[in-house]
Length: 477
Image (cartoon, rainbow, N blue to C red; front, side, top):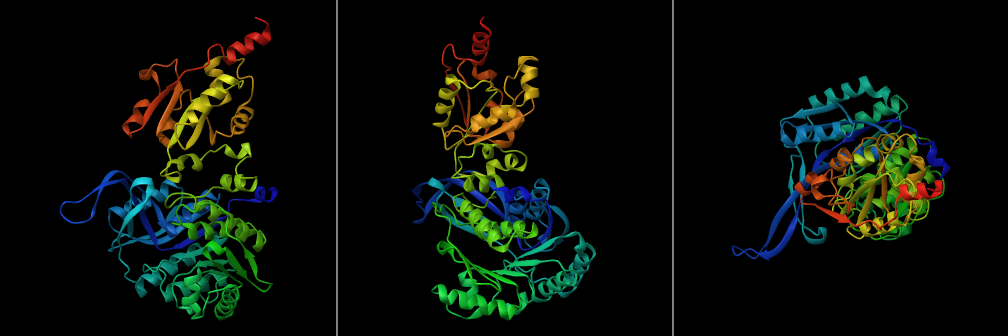
């Protein structure tokens, strides 16, 4: 995995149709007396970046510096989208607001995260010629700042033929690679791009050719590549994996074998990781391998979400057994709740200086309370303030790796404050766990967790087992 250490932060511009993906989470327990339809009882809701905006979010998760060029409505959802962009550190200088509805897809998730309905509110009015010229002029002024341009076409009005062709021409003039997640059946629209990424339906629509088997997919992909004058065509084939067409022999990868929970956003993750690898100079076959792996991780999640390099590393290291890569930080922490929708998150915290059987039993019981156990670990500086200048015995790096080596521990986050309150607010766990020596009213974060419908669980410690006792025993006291 040493090649992953070569990943650097490059400047990528995403141009495409952005949308707000909203999730209503609740349950269905009865049929309406007014009509034979289920009654959905809403318990909570959340909104995340969708469409081309989800591509940008995945690029951020892949460690890239991202700017967004898009159009949003002059409405509440447009403002919410821009707010989410800012939260993700996505540059919004090239986003324009128009008198239109910002696209919003609202999904109703009931028991076991089953999607029972989707409500779309959108405006697909095409970008006007005047606005097209304005946006191309804006792009021309900024284009030299970017190492790669990615077009994400959802046919919602931004990527018209004149605008798309104009962007591709500008990229070619400046020698900037440009890749496209296609949607429009008009192949001429994408002529001159570096790479096109269709799925099977899109490949059929773009070529008019049958794509029922391997030979037909390769034949249609080769035809599309020649027709559009592209260097590459990467066709995603669902459960059959992906096929890359270039000057060389076709390169095929099988879909990552794991449970498919939700395919929402898989294409966005694929092209985001492909872009991150390409812009960092990875060989195309390696870039396709990693994009395929990231897509496999994505489909195991609920709803629109991001995939992080830490997750890719875990999968490469052998189904997540590499303890180092259980340690998360930065945006991976900030986005943790959204990236684990539908899963019950258990949180506990401590110094865990010298790991002993009391810790093990405590954490084993905590892990049984939900789907994911995440541990907030006091940093070395924090431990010194709490325990004195002679502590910790083990460094934060050693302590975090030892915790990560435990199979029932999913993630470890190091925090520098004296209490984990900030961390709890960011992660928003469903279950907060502390030792039985605490009184409920003294547990930091309890009110925040319970306000969201979560709960506090106190687990008794094993009598006589503590780091302090171990240290005293070693000293012969």
